[in-house]
Image (cartoon, rainbow, N blue to C red; front, side, top):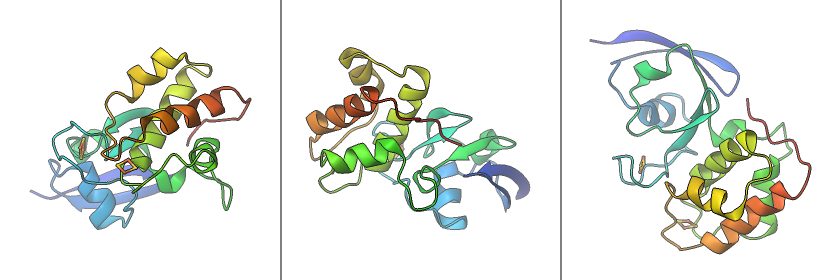
Length: 160
Ligand code: FES
Ligand code: FES
């Protein structure tokens, strides 16, 4: 039975009328037109669909929209400020950490969550955090390098 669900997406309040079990990823992509989060496995195993919900990285493909009610969701589209990229986005560009790019939105949001919690993570902490995000192009060394670059700077990494 469709119901009204209100949540904040990238600082903008949204009310959607939909089935409460519908995946958050589907609502973001198909209802709100935010196609940055990607569909990969659809079962919580690849991280391509990662978004932040109240600052925590979640697999939006297996998160029912009802679980996001009243919460704040950040997608890759909401990370930068105007034309300025978020420092983690910039670092991915600077070290050329993307090949096909499919995994990158989820990778970046997982990295932002880590850096918010642990501004100077060790390599082991980075690897542990990013373990849930799979890159089928095997770009892991560059991805770790990008995160270490941000950790080595004093960039402000908080997300909305
Ligand atoms: S598409 Fe969600 S974890 Fe793979
Ligand atoms: S850059 Fe292609 S999947 Fe990661």
